[in-house]
Image (cartoon, rainbow, N blue to C red; front, side, top):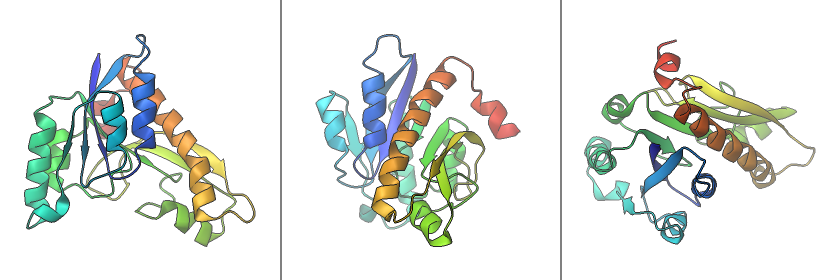
Length: 197
């Protein structure tokens, strides 16, 4: 059974998808804790499912490194097999990435390497493309630059707003994430091999 710590900054819809998947006794992964960098709405999902949570507010620390050290300590206390960044809007300090890698994955609302960074949906609209997508990657010290685990295209429709397009990408992200965790747990995806490729 794969144990997961999920880190969130917002509403936690990907987290909820994992929690719902894990209710199936056949699903080979369980969320053991949920962490956040602020008082995120998504922490309510953890509470509803009876999952412990922790918050390490970025603003409570003098710099990114000391925040990262505390975050890493909190994550390690749960001894997870895999850490999932799920709408987590802070760049992890290199030391944290190196400590957790390659068992550290992230969802991104674009078809990487297209439109990396915090505004993937907005950037796709600004570029006038006819399709974007969702990606799941192994986190490295680049910005959304790590090895791709899985990805899928999502069409951009005429007149799409950023919110509308993002709402169509989210279900694809959720499906990719739930499937990838299953594949990692079953040994069909080897993160170490991906990271070394």
